[in-house]
Image (cartoon, rainbow, N blue to C red):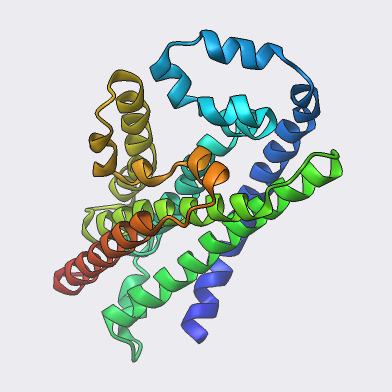
Length: 262
């Protein structure tokens, strides 16, 4: 527990700053939502868009529930990227920064195995990541209620859970990269790339093709807020695939770290 608390303390300041920034963004976006609730302009605009673009922007949600559709286009679509950047940055720092600052020798001299050191730090990161999603979803629902908007609490909880699964997977990719990277700079590039590159790929595939099977190659393909908000269907497929993928990536990270010379 001592190692776990130390890891949480190391993350806390970055977590707090990042959470404040995202919550301020949530407040800004939600403050404009009441104007959308009584506007027919948005629905007319959506109907005139090409079908692929309309699908990308959550067309059915925009038509049936304009406020939630607006929030998806302006905010919710990008939440896994924002939280994923925080997660990738922190995952890259779990090992590579200590190697660069020559602190890893001291840590490994303690009565703790490499496996335990890595898993405890990962546990602290997953805790911080889950807390980030909880704060963001609570802020979103709270600001909507404050603006007098109808709040689909169950739907947004599912959205937060689905987003957490995505960032869990991208964070696991960053962790694996950190375990094998030659220095902190390389680990950081991999960590941020694990969040940004799949997001750009997902957007490009959704715009360029209707072959949605390609979406499931990378984590963002399992993030579908319009569907979750409209149906409240639990994302069983995303849970199974992303949890297994995260477990395999974590195992690969542990194996890489145990075999590496420090």
